[in-house]
Length: 454
Image 1 (cartoon, rainbow, N blue to C red):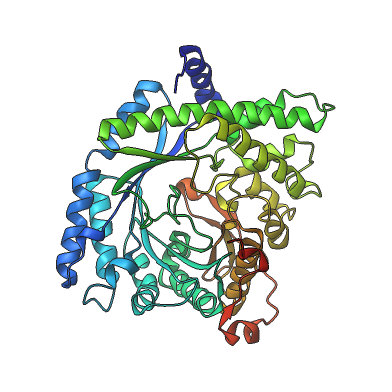
Image 2: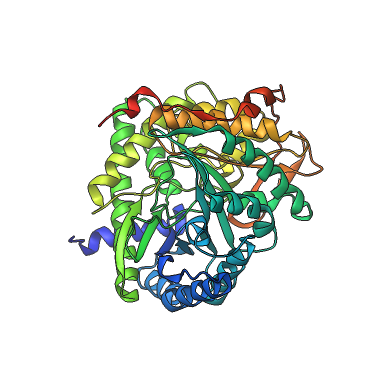
């Protein structure tokens, strides 16, 4: 791919004023050759392999970032789902694997490591059950380990037994980390249609169909898109908005792929995919919510918000896909409430509700993300929230996810501060009508008719 100098210079001008960055470079590492019947040996093998391939990730990413003047905010690692690895060992409690991952992550200096995961859309193995049972302790006693469970897919339907477990897991995670306002729950996400090359946390894992070692990249740039839209006449037709987003997405993606390929080359590994997702931060001006307001909304949350988000998501994909060699991951526009300054402001004023956010997830990536809810919310209500979101993903053949934090001891009107990229959020009201009979039915939800595509 030929990238001329003036393209690079034009893009770099976006860094200082518009918060342009590469949000993450994520090294995917297969752990299949680490398996030994003795779980202690397996843990040692896992640690050694991550150190072997990841020891220079941070150094090289920082060097490439300095070369091009484009920040690489996060350096991460994703690994083979630990339920796959643990099932071949004699371990009963999988916390030992989380400890090995955490130790390796700290040694190589990365921000997070993902893959303490299980894929249970069609049912459970004994290893899946052990991993799920280990999640609360594993995430509350480690610092950098992230976990995910895929409970449904368009092809398989939804595992309602797993959905019931997830509500209980989220509650236990929050309770075990109540001294940090339930922060452990922020490292856990529930999926339908999870993808195997996702570079973003908390849901990243290295799928068994992936190469041995790979580097995937997640771009960002909400501030750049907003700045471009701010120059569009308020009376211009929507077509002009779409074209503007496509053009700026093309430039951002070209920059991202250039940086990612150079990092991979320096590491001596293959480059995988570019995830085109617009990932916001709590910084002023770096907000997907503010982009939507440039469409002509008084505030994100107004009627027309879902329409605007659908247009944004489609235009980002069209512009970015033309610029990248290979697009993957989640790819779209993220709406993590606590991590987006525009979303934070809208929720504090009551403009955004859980129901409105659920509607928005029908047209964007990925789902209900980083939402703080009252600590007293029952586990079956959380399972109901998860079930609704999983249904959206299943029926619409898209990835959906839920990452909610029932903050212990706090209720509607309180604010929780997580810090860093996780930001802060007002506790959102939750409809606590009883759905326990539905959740407790268990069983498997059949896949929709569109699953029969073969």
